[in-house]
Length: 192
Image (cartoon, rainbow, N blue to C red; front, side, top):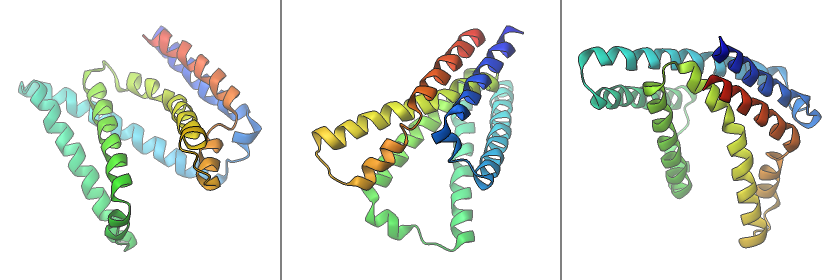
């Protein structure tokens, strides 16, 4: 029961984010509907992934079972990308050629993050634990945005106002985000 109370506390922390006017004013019906669909589908996906990792244990593959399921997950993500490329009839090759360095770094980091997330789903007693801990993503976004902002303005002396505006926007309502993170931390502590 205490673990579910902890999940409720984490949810309360996430709800605290809506107290900031700067954050709340950026919400729209379209945004909320897209995010609700994304959360629903991601949650459903995590449940199926957890079940796949659990069922592969019956075949005594050991760590190879994780790699097999992760390979299937990656293949599904690749095929979904191909499907949407065909559906919207846009050629991503032009952008990839132009921004291949950024693409390579971003996809490399994304791959390592996905690998870690999938491995945590594999070893966690429940996917709800993984989902709860992943609510700390906004903290890392704030942290990395601060580092990039300091780097751009102080070290690199880059004067591109658009880039700085993007990273400054991540810091809107920073105190509400920090308080919400502390509340979520208490919830994660209760879960563990």
